[in-house]
Amino acid sequence: MSGRALERPCQNARVGSTAGATDAARPGNAPLSGGAESPSRRRRAVLRRALRHELTRLHDRRRIAAMAILIITFGTLAAGLVARGEPAGADARAYWAAVRIWLGGGDPYRPTGPFLPYVYAPWMLPVFAPWALLPWDVAWYVWRGGTILAFLWSVHWAYSRRPLTTALTVLVLAFPIGANLDTGNINLPLALLLFAMPFVGPLAAGAIWAMATWMKWVPVVFVLVMKPRARLWGLLFLAVSILLSLATLPETIAQLEALVGFGRRPIRLDYLVFLWALVPILWRRTDPFAWLRPAWWRGFWAALRGERRSRTRQVRGWVGIPYGSPGDRQGAASEPVPGDAFVVPRADAIEPVTTEAPGPG
Image (cartoon, rainbow, N blue to C red):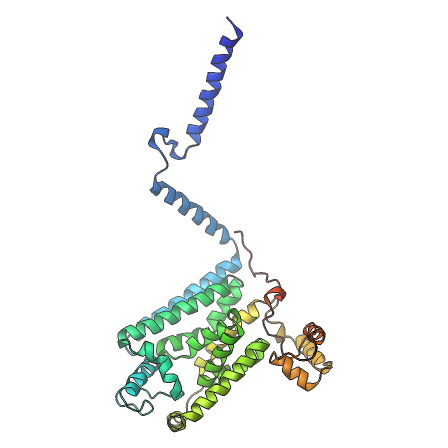
């Protein structure tokens, strides 16, 4: 028998063994004649891989604790909101009714009917108008639903960077968050707008700060943590707000009378929700709570005492107004500016963030 005849059975055997191995490796040992894998089987495989990936993250105890805290907190808030039912939304209904009374030629600061008086600047009524034109049931659904979605987005952003710290912060602020979601007060939407300031340009950040400050006054302290150019725009928008209130002086006087008409009010714990707006500023730093230690303040005061620039240059730098030659501005930009310790730096100067619990995946 020739050599070529002896080689054919060996080649056929190798081909047969390779085909058998391929059949064995195919999922479910499906026959080739059946074509591609079925869509349902592919979906199950993707689901299994996703579940395995998430289960590997549960080996981290800090992440497990963060998830447990958030689940309990959100569950308690949801139960409270459902239990309140119809009485909820008193503050949001006041904004809604004020626009309708104003459009009807009435006085929103002295409403008739089961509505609280409107207590904000008269020139802000058109801001609420597109929303207030909806029927109340739809408007309340949009107001509360939109606020909840925006808040959940902010929690997701914070949790992806510092899971346990975020969960503890939500737990501490659970009461003011729940109170604002229950009444529909504008505190929480304003806090979420302030939360978004580091993600927008200086013009939008200044407008957000000015509007929130003119409505509630508590956000005025956020001027200390804004970028210099955003401060400048914010102060300009605040000046415009003052001029608009003076231009509508009779209505502004009615607004002040409505505020005084509430009489002595209890401590507003719901204002604590504005602390949530500090999260994106602090979470981007390697040590977000360094300012709680005395050593940080000693360094701060040392830098303040060592400042060699004139007061005029300090103020111009604080509000982002250029001064001097380009060389002077470049040298001043490399020096630490007292009072800007919390300001979010430029994208190319952000400190590297290490998450609390780096798990697999």
